[in-house]
Length: 116
Image 1 (cartoon, rainbow, N blue to C red):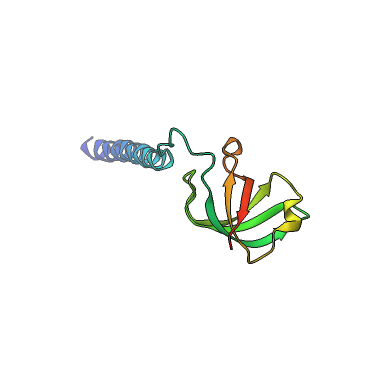
Image 2 (image 1 turned 45 degrees about the horizontal axis):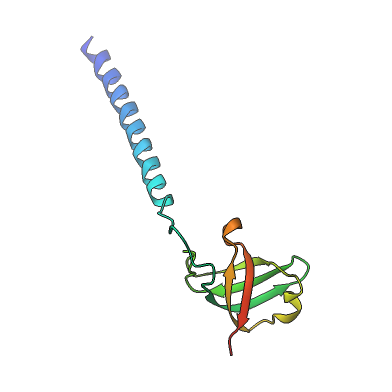
């Protein structure tokens, strides 16, 4: 009887340990994903960027930028533009300052200024 109980208790112990570890791992991911959001971001605040690509077929401009006032970290990514006529004005290699739309998570350029 002792031989049968030991493997059973070991199996139960492993099951509970795995469950606890999975929950702890899940909680750790949640803690990393939920960062406090600034109560208010200045809508007029602009971030610096370099135009990497203008894609008129997708109506996007790819920007390499530093950290943005809305909390977005430095990266290179494609943004939609509020006015597709801007795609005729923007050129690869230009330095700009720009603001994004907080309503869509900062995925659309609402305004920009050329940097000279």
